[in-house]
Image 1 (cartoon, rainbow, N blue to C red):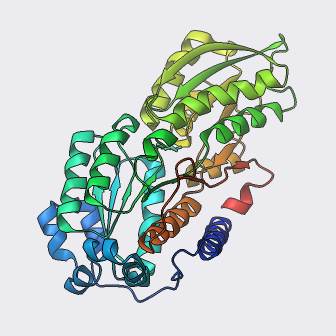
Image 2 (image 1 turned 120 degrees about the vertical axis):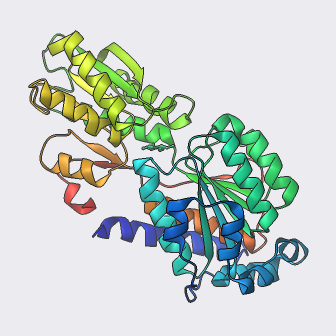
Amino acid sequence: MKLFKRVMAMTMASIMVFSMAACGGSDSASTSGTNEAAPAEKEEEAAPAETEQEAAPEQAEEEAAPAENEAAPEAGGEAAAGGSGNIGVCIYKFDDAFMTTYRNALQEILEGKGYTVTFMDGKNDQAEQNNQINNFITQGVDALIINPVMTSAADQIIATVKDAGIPTVLINREPTAEQMSAYDKLVYVGCDARQSGTMQGELILDTPNKGDINGDGKVSYIMIQGDPENVDAQYRTEFSVKALTDAGMEVEELDLQRGDWDRNKGQEIAQNDLAKFGDDIEVVFCNNDDMAIGALQAIQAAGRTVNEDIYLVGVDALDAALNEVASGNMTGTVLNDANGQAAGAVDAMEALLGGKTYAAGEQSIYVDYVKVTPDNVADFQ
Ligand code: BGC
């Protein structure tokens, strides 16, 4: 079991609870009984709003109506933080390896606390997600946790939840501080993507030849990017290379292509680049692990050997990637702490339900990334 991740998540949770108490926020991090809703089923079906509403226990609806929260935040907060609230969770798409881990963590924590939770699959379609948010608002959910499909839709999402007065936690795709400042019952919980990019670069700098396998004085790499609309993709791309140049290395970008966080696309891009650039490729940077696993398939099919004649790094610490790091088929990865972020998101949600508001410029809560190498990979498995 992922003991390390669990410990991280629990530590995170206690830190957040402590700071909430210190800020006079919700005092109710205690757990309560679970409820009888069957979220696994709902999750798979992504059933229409009406069905979802029916599944919600009446008691929860009565106890924690949004109007009550607004009128008497303390009272509303106590009821909801006791685990009796209805929570709507919008995920940009269920079919994303990392967000599946994240979603499972959220489900476990929220249900463990006794909340009634409904997950919706945005299917990578912002219009669809907008409908889902509107449906949740119509249903009178107590709080929303939203992983936006498009960061560029943040203004609209924020205006919608503000209008409805719903406390909202945004996750995974970070809007700008200015966008968030429009609504003080809104907070972002995630990671600083610059850190993960820097760590990827450091993983390469930590190799015996600092990535310059052929000794020609420069690190020649290909970059397999996530969805470039997403700040995680932008920063990881920029800061992984910046770590090398900051350390005085010369770099050569052989190719940069968007793989949209997708394993198959990672495989295709790596396959084409290996055919085109051959041994010139010394480093394969992937913005996430799923694409790195795809790239690894192409690397192995091309007869190349990671850590001998090519380096490969990802981000997320998916189980599959941890196995590859342990067996030397990936140079390293970076833990994108889904459990820690889920715990942080729930803590922030409870603080909001307890009446806490967030000042402009203080609406981003970050969980640290962690470098994963063969030396410490066992701690994460
Ligand atoms: C993760 C990716 C994931 C993306 C979704 C990133 O933080 O590293 O694996 O696909 O979030 O937005």
